[in-house]
Amino acid sequence: MIGKPAAAVHLTCRVSNFCPLVYYRSLVECRRARAGGRASPYESSHLTTDRSPSHGPSEKSFAALRHPAFRAYFLTSALAMMADNIEHVISYWMMWEKFHSQSLGGFAVVSHWLPYLLFSVYTGALADRFDPRRIIQLGMLLFMAVSLVWGYLFVTDTLEMWHAMVLLVIHGLAGVLWGPASQLFIHDIVGPAQLQSAVRLAATARILGQLMGPAVGGGLMLAFGPAHGILLNVLIYLPLLWWLWKAPFKPRAPHASAVRGLADIVAAIRGIAHNRTIVSMTLLAGGASLFIGNAYQAQMPEFAHDLGHGRADFAYSMLLAADAAGAFIAGVVLESRGLLKAKPKTAFILAMLWCCAIGGFAAATYYPLAFSLLFIAGFMQLSFSSMAQALVQINAPADIRGRVIGLFSMAGLGMRAFAGITVGVLGGVIGVHWSLALSALGLFAIVSGLALFTLRGAHRAN
Image 1 (tube, rainbow, N blue to C red):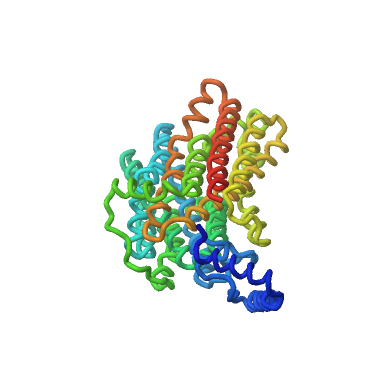
Image 2: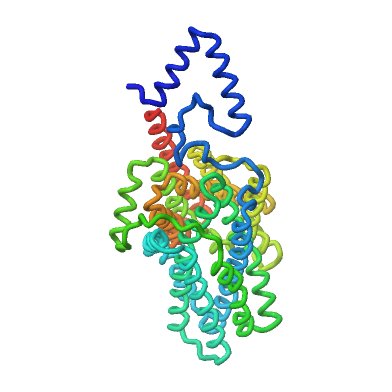
């Protein structure tokens, strides 16, 4: 059965075949309309939806930065991410100096990622229902409070292990308040047209903060000492907190339902179950975090030792920063040319290339090759992860968009709490080189299956 828009186009073609004048006039009108940026009178407006190509990512370079509000958010969020990493540098150092506990270091990793697994959908639901600016501000206030308490405990030399554990948990909760709400906020700033650019640039801002954090944190420790350094770090959160108070924001229609905890997870899953793109991108993010994530970073000393750089020298530091540098370059290069439109097929190909780069790094015995493969891995990871995030947000139903973003964060970040099992624990049995290579191979197989699932469904729909 032919719908109304399709029937109109079909009828126009039939008339054009019998009347050359009608055909010529329709062709001229179409060309004039496209030249003027308008819809052709022979094209039905019903064909344009929130998910149509007309709302797809812009091909302009750094498209999202053309929005003044997003430029401000890009800079202030990069500073906040830098402050987050400065706190990690100083607090982790002081915890090791005070307790020399490997278990506490493991707890720090779990407490950082587990809140995303438990509460991402809940905070996404809050962002659906309330102003996401205020939720982000709440997260910033928690970050600042944690840094202040760290500083007080360092100055008074009264830090105990239970203090550290509580502060690490609060820090993780602050992160999960920031995550889903920030993605919903940038969607409100730029809209669907530049959403892919905004997601990719927001990821680049996070990487920039992660690259600058250790350097600035080390500088603060050397110049002022750990206690005063972490107290000064509180000031770096202020620009984002202050700007959000009067940041431009277009209030959404009050269509979101009340926050219901666990029921929100079930509702989000039901809401996206019919959408193969959202399902596959969420599973892709979850699989990447569970099988690999960033667990290989914790095993970097052993990789460096096997590559002939077992001491904490410049070569070891370069190896640690290689994938972050690759991710940052990916954000700059892709945005400068408006490359790689958000498509499921492209995301799967990039994820497979990431698996190949990680597997190649695990097998590498030559330092320059290992460094290059880690750089490529960082490039591919930012490319496919930001694309998956954009596809989920573009296709998410408006009334549960925050919950869907939370579900994506739960999979993409929450599953990192268990990434150490596939790489670290298995590495203790068969060696980290084999465990990382097998994890990459297993993820490659899963991504291949998800690609077949998604693309076959799209083929059937067409």
